[in-house]
Structure formats: structure tokens, C-alpha cells
Length: 200
Image (cartoon, rainbow, N blue to C red; front, side, top):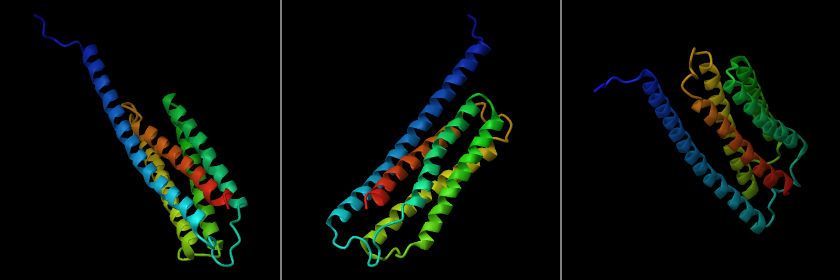
């Protein structure tokens, strides 16, 4: 009885194992994003309840939020989701230069969003302790901004790892999960933008 193992079969088994492992990791990451969604949804629900039940919702002397700059920031952030998608596509085609370029562009767009948010905060006439609206505004935008910063740092990590020879030969979990996280951050911001800036 021949007990020798065919090298091709061994490679196939190894490849299947890596595929299953990457799938399990992605499943776990999706569960993590779902848990994050629950946190944001609770914040959204709280914001809606407070807004619809609180008298004098806006702080004294504040008639509403300026919407032009936040709209521009929103367009930039949402557009970055398409840019990071192109980065993924380049990596799938083994175009590392294109991958790095689109990833760097995504990081720049995310950084511009944070800069725009910092400028907005510096120009606001109310603070975190300025009533219920002030607390909810800074909590929601600040918590989301923390997620944007996390996404940028994750992108920086995978950008650095792209310079390691053969780093993506065994799979693209890091890139795929980072991209999914970025799409999640963008969707959350669209909801926030509608709640805070459009619904005034």
C-alpha cells in the first residue's frame, strides 16, 4: 500500500485550510462590527428620543449648525469608500503600486475629514456641557471620529506591510477587514450626518 502523499494534494489541503481560517477570521470581524453597530444604534436612539422630548434642544444662542463644510467633509469621506475599493481591486490583480496609491489616497481623505471636524469643533459656540444637545453632539461625532482615526491607523499598518515581500501571498484578510471597517465607518457617518445636520 502506497502511503506517500502527493505534493499537489498536500498543497490543496493547505490552501483549503488557509481559506477556511481566513473565512473564520472574517466572520469574527463581522461579529465585531455588528457589536459596534449596536453601540451606535443605541446612541442614535438616544439622540432621537432626547431631540423629540427635550425643550430648548439647542444651547442658548445657537440657532442651528452650519451645514456647508460638514457636507463637503461627508462627500470626501463617502468618496473614500470607492477609493479603498479600488485599492482592494489593485491588490487582487497583484498591482502593489496601484494598491499603495489608492490606499494612501484613502488615508489622506480620511485625515482631511478629521481635520475638517477639528476645525468645525474649534468654531462652535457650544461645548460638551452645553445641555443635552452639546453632550450628544460631541459624543456622537467624537466617537465616530475615533473610529475614523482607527481606520486610518489600520490602513497605515497594511500599507507598511505591503512592502514586506510575499506578505499577501497567503491571503488578504488584513486588507479586506480594514476595507470593511472603513465602509462601516462611512455608513455610520451618513446616518449621523442626516440626524445631526440635516434634521435640525
